[in-house]
Image 1 (cartoon, rainbow, N blue to C red):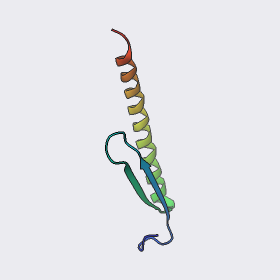
Image 2: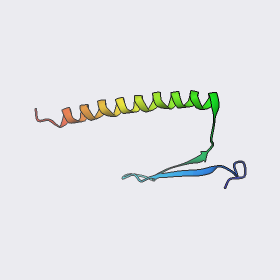
Image 3: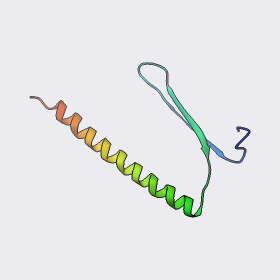
Image 4: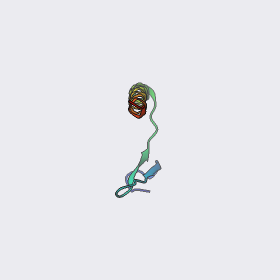
Length: 69
């Protein structure tokens, strides 16, 4: 583990790409409680909702583009 976060779990994600080097992400998991947890939970729910709406809209656009003219 990294020196500044010895008690935190580590996560990592490697995303292969067809063209170019893979994208690699990593970080530490830090548990939070109380008001900060509630605030971040609300923000996370908002971001997830925004991403789901964006993905739905993009999927609809792509399916419209795939239809024959």
